Length: 105
Length: 255
Ligand SMILES: Nc1ncnc2c1ncn2[C@@H]1O[C@H](COP(=O)(O)OP(=O)(O)OP(=O)(O)O)[C@@H](O)[C@H]1O
Ligand SMILES: Nc1ncnc2c1ncn2[C@@H]1O[C@H](COP(=O)(O)OP(=O)(O)OP(=O)(O)O)[C@@H](O)[C@H]1O
Ligand SMILES: [Mg+2]
Ligand SMILES: [Mg+2]
Image 1 (cartoon, rainbow over the protein chains, first blue to last red):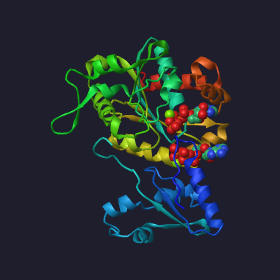
Image 2 (image 1 turned 30 degrees about the vertical axis):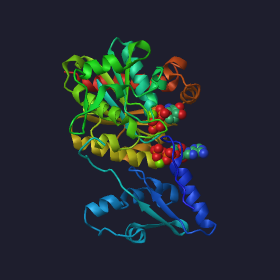
Image 3 (image 1 turned 90 degrees about the vertical axis):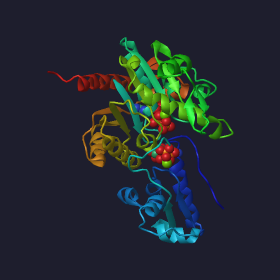
Image 4 (image 1 turned 120 degrees about the vertical axis):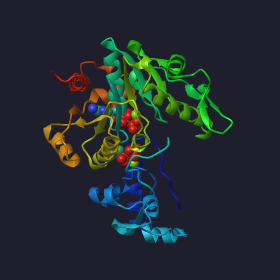
């Protein structure tokens, strides 16, 4: 199954996502946790740790910086950018806004 | 003063922005309140009736080049006069508005118009004597994309927890890199001095103010009424007032 969690700021999206992922992993599922927030905090709710979460390489920035080649397949992206989280979860961070940016959106 | 309130989701940005705006207006200032959140919350914290449609939709049009622009004759002054919503104590609220069930595309005009209006407010003589209090959406996005170019102060709201502190660090770093405004961290929902100290450790810098966790704030929000009307002498309301005094001192340094 593929689950997207959405809602108002601070309503508990990250907490619910992280806990769901851990519960699924513990009941034997292979779980890919995808943080699609440009202010990615899912690592904290998964148990990766705050400072570690703050440092995770995001796909968008990694590809832009040319550190990691663009991977044509989803599996390749997960392999290149995934981090191990507790209970065998793979965590991928899509993008992180960390600096002043041009344009209006 | 021109204040942009930023921070993590649910940190208390709207409560703080709404209360600051009302307090300034009660001191006789002309106050423009700005809400650029696509899930707007400031109207409730101010006590205004939120407009049904994004008001600035009417102010935008697409040029021949396919880009959005403000309609002829609409500058920042007219935009505020025509499209702002009145709030108690004489505050005017200009909000971006929220998408309906059909998503973002139908309100792109409003989004572009809002961005253009705030950029023109920055240098507009007509607003020189106004106070501006802006409630920005959660996270670093709008700070990074310069949605509060008029701000001379960023209040970065932090709850005593890591997700909130990491967000605050990121937003503060971005705002400081722009180099235009003072960036002041404010702890909210604090219970006791140990909480404040923990927040300072997580941030790696001292706090400008600490606002207490206060059931009166939560109750006002449950009822959908402004804190300043429901519980003006609650600990949180008083702490926001004290913070406003401190902001005033910060902006007019003693000679
Ligand atoms: N059921 C709950 N009971 C008590 N507190 C909760 C509950 N769910 C979430 N919280 C708390 O609410 C706060 C916000 O949660 P979380 O970070 O998961 O929200 P979010 O929707 O992801 O926020 P953002 O919009 O900033 O990404 C956290 O402090 C979390 O611990
Ligand atoms: N000092 C406080 N004590 C207790 N509850 C508080 C306090 N400040 C804010 N809250 C509560 O926290 C919740 C979030 O507040 P508010 O809507 O102002 O946050 P926000 O940062 O604007 O959220 P969003 O990111 O969704 O716009 C509300 O339920 C509010 O009542
Ligand atoms: Mg979240
Ligand atoms: Mg809000």
